[in-house]
Amino acid sequence: DIKGFVFDLDGVITDTSVFHSQAWHQVADKVGAPWSKELEDGLKGISRMDSLEMILKAGNLQDHYTDDQKVDLATEKNTNYLKLVDKMTPANILPGIKEFLDEIKDGGYLLSLASASKNAPTVLKKLQLTDYFPKIVDPKTLSKGKPDPEIYLKGAELINLKPEQCIGVEDAAAGVESINAAGETSIGIGDKTILKDADVNFTDTSEMTLANIKKQMD
Ligand code: B16
Ligand code: MG
Image (cartoon, protein in one colour):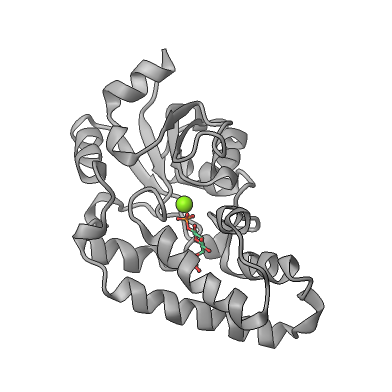
């Protein structure tokens, strides 16, 4: 029986995936790496430094920067990203999410957050959703990021549930892979061709209700 939900943040609860993309696109232009839809999708759910490596690799530029310079580029991206986050309000919560969070909270399900983002607590605060997520996986404690199952295993552990008692909710292919490898039920939100491995698919967050999830799980 399902007793809890482990949530991704960027691209599921809020539209920050657009901000991440915008800020990385600036870095790609600066270093002269080609930007593409495939790269943009591939960066979703990937940690800050791993994202930078992917961008540099796309331009065959991995060896052109020292470790210190790479840290500077990632810091610059984060500064630009935080400028966008600073303007956020609860209006940036994706459609239907607040209603769904209330539905599962009232239904007695437990909730945790499995975001790769070190900025997750800041973003939740801006959205006024902090109270919904007393349990947040700290990405600094992870030895491996998504698609490794570690982050979703920790998300279940934080609410004292077995993976098979949890549903993980993701917008990224790397995230769905992580949920599946952890042994949880996966919901993929977005393009079905990219999220083809999810157990349950929704094109848009507004479709996510307990009744609609049940329909696809039967
Ligand atoms: P930060 P999620 C991920 O969050 C984003 O999808 C990804 O684009 C970002 O690079 C990563 O967090 C790290 O974020 O630089 O803020 O620590 O989708 O796992 O909630
Ligand atoms: Mg995401």
